[in-house]
Length: 172
Image (cartoon, rainbow, N blue to C red; front, side, top):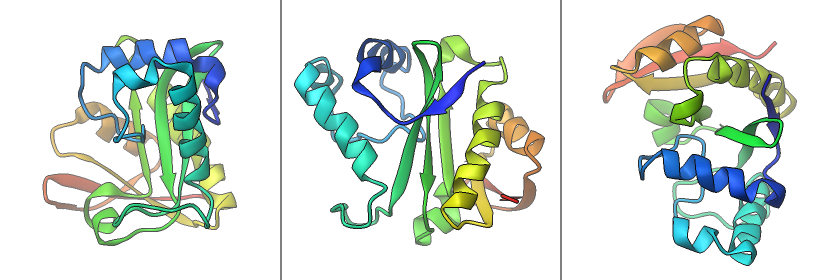
């Protein structure tokens, strides 16, 4: 079964294969919005990308306006990257209304096998270690799969804002 791992250059080939499967669609929890897929084919650039993801959790790391400290993790089974997950350490206005603490995505070929549910479940103790006692997790109104994932992990629906369903999950 898949586990959450810190991003690592070892997974470059599999990460690239997963990224291609998304066909340019936004990957929740993926990070690296400023990196092109073409650039990330270069091992040196991929190494810098991985370093950037890992550094995003550090308080001293520079951030773009509107970004908060974030722990990025990859959903991995064996040597295959199945997806990504991000734990935002705090909520700004965007996070509170739409983004939430935890975002995740699973590559299309690995969906509907429980990977997202397990990844979200495995992320809860990590969030607790970061001092977050309740996480906000959101999904698009029409994303039945993500809704089921959140509800399977004891997500309590609060409301919907800007097309996003908002759920709270206790981390302890």
